[in-house]
Amino acid sequence: MITIPADPYPFTLDPATTALVVIDMQRDFVEPGGFGETLGNDVALLQSVVPPLRKVLDAFRAAGLTVIHTREGHVPDLSDCPPAKLNRGEPTLRIGDEGPKGRILVRGEYGHDIVDELAPLPGELVVDKPGKGSFHATGLQDELVARGITRLVVTGVTTEVCVHTTVREANDRGYECLVLSDCTGSYFPEFHRVGLAMIAAQGGIFGWVAPSEALITALVPQEVAS
Ligand code: TIU
Image (cartoon, rainbow, N blue to C red):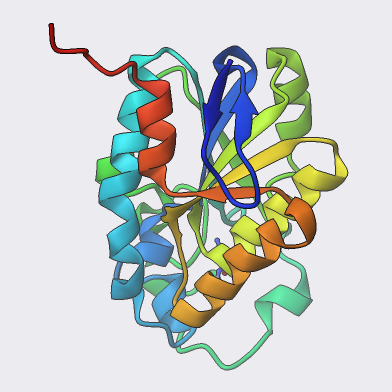
């Protein structure tokens, strides 16, 4: 068992029953010309998530622990995209329209895939989801049960949308979630700050929050100079 200093109190985990969940680190959200930008967002705000998240990925991989990636998107005929989602707002391009990185938020398109720096390795589970939450209309819960996973280290984008929805879904299903503050990000810095505060408030109503350094320090045994 390892213990990580966290808000609102230390988070204890058994690495064997803990998974790293990397939510929607797709070009569509993180790079120009994708879904995030069509919604009117400055996607540059999400770039800072990539380097610390890569360090966490490396630490989980080096320790041989479970890594799960998610991707938000839809099948090419958009039959899994409710009209309420398709028609919402006034985006410059709608889901399914042809954009500079392929059809917006459509599975199999270049823009739908995960950024190169965080690309899944063979053997890592990739969960394709049509909604904001990672449990809705996916096999994620069955996959977690099959692996004996009870705790999730949650990362990715965006803090108040897909990260929050996933943490809330996980919370109601009995999973303990540690959200890494520097490995999650939002197009709205205020929403990021408040989103994290909402998770840890009320004694950890949805889970715990910590910087990635706290997790890595606990996960990777430090060399003691002799
Ligand atoms: N728009 C926004 O902030 N997020 C999403 O649409 N999806 C995710 O958060 N992945």
